[in-house]
Length: 149
Image 1 (cartoon, rainbow, N blue to C red):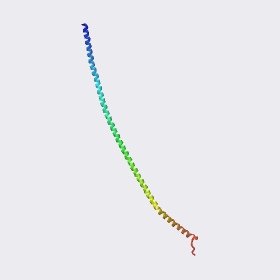
Image 2: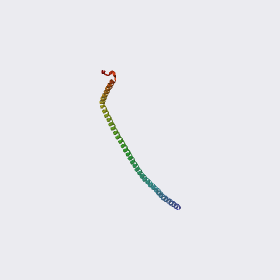
Image 3: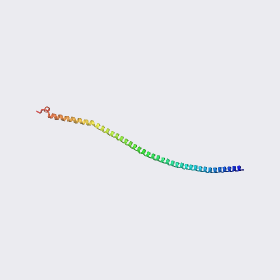
Image 4: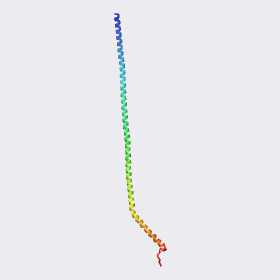
């Protein structure tokens, strides 16, 4: 009986140890589970924060792209305006050049159309001068003077 009571006591001690281990294990599991849940919550919070930061960065990128596009459009508009102005200036200069060439041609034609008349007038002046020189020379040269008695 003593053995039986020793075996009973040992069995009860083992059962108490097992109960203690179960209780400690349950607390340990709860502690670990609580830490895991806390870590999960921390990670969820971090994910939400990162998603929020990502959304803000995307909004900044969209805003920057929009501003860059507006600046590009403004530059393109100014460039196209300058090019258009230069094209207009070039066309105006070409028209003026053509008008100047036409005006020069018109004056050239007028001058040359007057040339035959000018040539005839010069020829008449030369003939008159020649005649005057001859008559003056004849009047002064005794050998060519007519004899008057």
